[in-house]
Image 1 (spheres, helix red, strand yellow):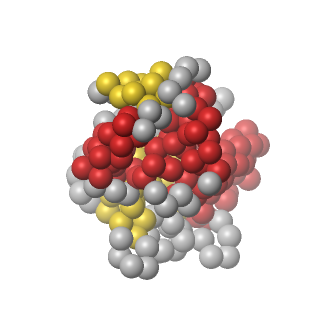
Image 2 (image 1 turned 45 degrees about the vertical axis):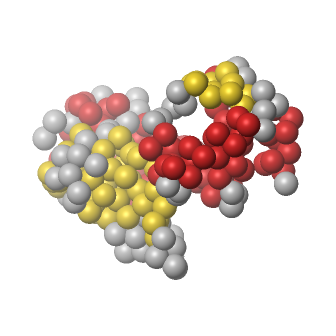
Image 3 (image 1 turned 45 degrees about the horizontal axis):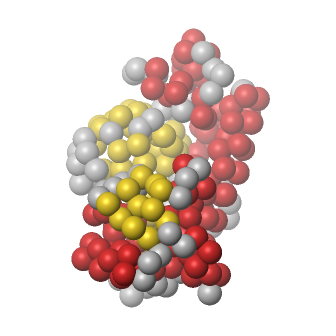
Length: 224
């Protein structure tokens, strides 16, 4: 098993390859291969193992009670899946994880993860840091999903990009098809709303570049 990709993940930060090899030698760790379209985890199934992508990527999708599917995020290797949900009384996968391409992953049973964390203080701190960061991202995502209209979601998305990129002219960080999927809407609906926001003077769009013309009104949309 090639462990070098794991050393690039936050979970194993500051560990050396020999240290990781010694840890894994005492644990039950399985390497698996998966194909594009294969389901690695089902929404609401118990989280009884830690899945860490070594190569490839997966998409996380959530199905609401009405049957509507919303894409939550794409996860690229090397990265763990649902690390925040491994422990707790009702620890279930919050989304379905489906492979976007062929890849490999390692599976570590929950008890082996507990033993691994108890064997190495650095690993334990890394795990706690990752859990805290993930909880923060999840909170922001839930806040975003609480907005009902496409215009509100665009306002939040563009405001966040503006803050990250330090400019009122931003470059979209994903294609519009992926952005529509992220919003949980059809691409034509997204395109129409962008056009309407241009007509209202809120923004000016040129392919992947968007200029925010009226930031104050954009903020009012978010707060309304």
